Amino acid sequence: MNMFDVLYSRKSVRSYTGRVPSEEQLKEILKAAWAAPVARARYADMHLTVIKDQRILSAVEENMGRIAGKEVHPLYGAPLLILVSVKPKQKEIVNNEYSSAAMIVHNMALAATALGLGSCDIWGCLQAANERTDIVEMYKLPEGFVACCGIVIGETQESFPLRDIPQEKISTDFID
Image (cartoon, rainbow, N blue to C red; front, side):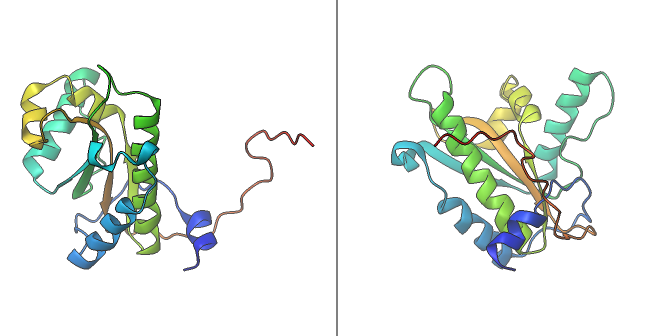
């Protein structure tokens, strides 16, 4: 698949077979993450945690269910979650740290698409889980790191047809 085919066919997938990516596929996805740009080249302040442990995945989902007051599945049954954590320079995570984490997730999403795997960016339920020390402890993050966002990845029955991208889907001005 060429790069533009990957861009025009990538989508958020919310249904998975339960089958995890192969070790070779995971290596390619992580390589894509490592290739992502990071603000001020602060790679040492970024951390990836590959989670296949169903106990942790269930804890994240159950926490959101408790908050929502009903059963929810914010990880969509995906068998793999990759957390992107940052070591904030300030008390809280700031814009360039969020942006760097998002670039890492997006690179992994593009790699997953190129490999024919489903993926979906994950934010809200991870932010909610950060309020629970019992869940955060399960992540086994290095000292000073905070889970920022993540991506779920797995085999899917969905296909990835090229999408028609409407011109100016996003309002665009040209200044000459």
